[in-house]
Amino acid sequence: MSGLSLMKNGLVVFAKELTDALRDRRTLLRLLVPAVLMGPLMLLALSGLIGSLEERAEQRQILVQGIENAPTLRNYIERQTYTIKPAPADYEARLRATTLLEPVLVIGKDFEQQLRDGEQPVVEIVSDSANQRAGAGVGVLSRLVAGFNSERATLALALRGVNAGELLHAVDAEERDLASVQARATRITSMVPMFIIMAVLYGALTAALDSTAGERERGSLEPLLMNPVQAFALVAGKWGAVALLGMAVALLSNLSFIPAQWLIRSDSLQAMFQFGLHEVWTFLLLQLPLAAGLGALLMAVAIRSKTLKEAQAGSALVMTLVGLAPMIALFNPGGEAAWYLWVPGLAQNSLMMLVLKGEALTMAKVMPSVVVGVGLTLACLAYVAGSMRRAVAGPR
Image (cartoon, rainbow, N blue to C red; front, side, top):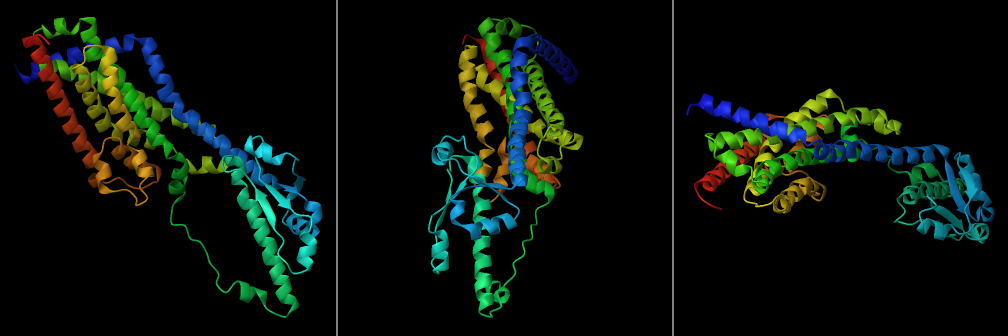
């Protein structure tokens, strides 16, 4: 048959598979809700946490137990425009139970006497490492104590006629951050690519399994194979519907981050997180090789399964490996390696992170994922077509 006939038959199968997939609205809703809403909800929850930390920082309040024992320290803290609040008596229990969200500065009774005698009084900064919000305030108390120590040393040296500025600060250190605003924002927004990759996976999963193992379980695959349609045209039509659904869910997941950023509570995060239509379309194009390759791979895994449940068990490994691939970059302190761009899932995560950082994409970085996607697609589609030919030629 001619290539035109092959294309025509493939389009007919594509339309049929797409119609069948869209007809199952209940399954689509179960698929779309987590894929589209989970990422924005996580972003909003994160922005709420950051917003609450910023509000606490603006209030400039600290909890202290025994501040009456240290009038000199109290004087210094209040001059730094901090408000001192007495810590609750059961602060340790409340810190462990995470009902107290601020660390506590504990001052002993002999603080002033030891200070006058030239000794070093000990103060405690009490927190709980499992209480993340309380842990975030430890740095404030540490800086206040360090500032008090520096001031006391400066005054003591000044009384002896020593220039404390030159003695204590022989070198001035200035920090210079080379990262752009967008790059600094990726420390928080690095979760966005992972959710979009998962959206592609879940979008393609249902259609891939239903069009292969699902039809075999229902007994509709064998009659379909008996039609005078080329096996590759049949497979290509099914694959086209699978890849399109994966990309459709990815598009919705991309678009969902636009209204989500309007609801961000943290002003600093909202200023850093710039996600518009440019990022949406760039991310979508980067997902094309992933949707194509994984759609074909899921079909190849499912075509040898006798039931839908068996196919779901087999595809779980694919979902896990691809879904967790971006985690490799988090556990590699040496930075991104060149082979990242050849791993499905990990490559897309690396490329989307470059977009979020505001860096330019080059053909040398994009082409490996395209080559892998095309190769994986052709190999898996050929395998699925061969399996279907063998199903027609003889019994399973």
